[in-house]
Length: 132
Length: 402
Image (tube, rainbow over all chains, first blue to last red; front, side, top):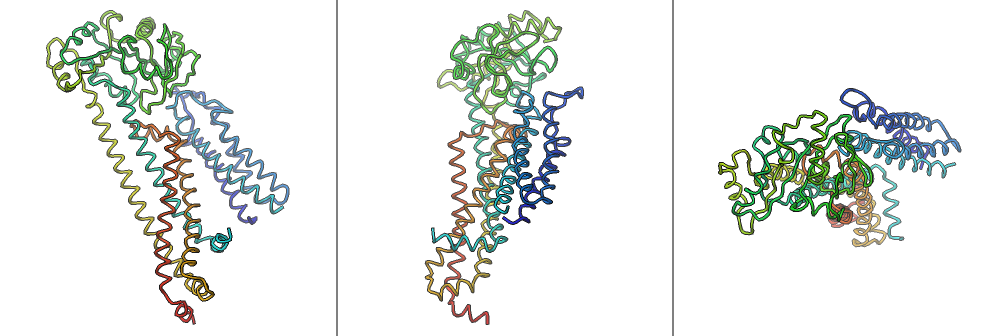
């Protein structure tokens, strides 16, 4: 895989991070109580946001790297993606009822984004190791 | 292995064309897999609901219509309560055509500090119940004791934990199997436990609008009619009698009519969409393979002049197509799985219909069928293109270029 192709994929990972970070603050937001107070899943929402921002920064940052640094960036991207999969429900609690917004929307969206980002990061990582 | 080397190289040499073919077959597999899983899940949800209700006729107070409908509680997950006099039970038992009957008592917990979850609580008479008990017994073989509850699969409480309902601690003894219906969001307990919860709710000044003694009320009576009797006739007979003027008998099948109509409508729409997508994709695949074959006329002519038989040429084309279709099929099924499984709750919530996803072996079978169909359609499309091309004389093709 050429460096250019790796760059494209890492940009996609960055965009996925940006998508989930913006999403969790807008249309994929976790639950809010009727009185406006934060629900149990608020922590998961914050964690997803920060992981999304980190993915966005590192995903775009990888395009300027080469050699060992590129491999390290790809591995960090992979770890962040796995953390994104685990964030809602495993690393941070989500609301108990299966009908709650965080269980219906936020958790699956974070997991799907994490899975796709992890696969792409893995491809970039393998490509970077081969080209090193 | 050698036979696949040339097709693989050909595909790698034209990444744009390969990507387009993979995308097309992925779209085919995705639409077939997703469409069939959603349609099957809806059908399973409906049959699960029919099995779970188990009763032919349900008797509820007339006021239930003006408060919360029974079908809203059982089918749409709404919470509510309504009560009628328990004295009706022996009278209903004497009605001709009634084989079996069992009462249930409803209570809705609140999204407030008194309750850990806002859910529908249903009290069952364990001596007579024939609707919920068989379902509970699959997860918990014993009788529900005092303050024991069995929770639906969507309730966030595990066996051994306690849930607080109207400041009363209830012990979770069973988590029930998923039904794909609103019943998954209910909590089930014995009549005695529910009456204790009713008292607790009244103690907290929660107005349940019970006129008499809470010990003497029920919310609904489930009837099973005798073999050979028409449930509609039994329901009509109850509705026409003066002594039952405060209640109404509803045939459970009529509760399903609306939902069955929506279900068939959704299934039909999904079916039509899948057929339309397939028709479009097949035409696009045919055009794509035809254009690709035309573009490669000279390449095939050279291969023919070098001694490649028509059969070998067709085999080469087929391998290229099979590889593309297989990759596209796997991609399409994976994408569909990535949407269907994590977002199953959202799909169910958006459809507002009972939705029970098939078991893993059925899913695997559907995925394999979608994959096979994508490969088959791709192969047929390329076979037609190859057949057209192999009819042309290689010499003529090469002369055309000069």
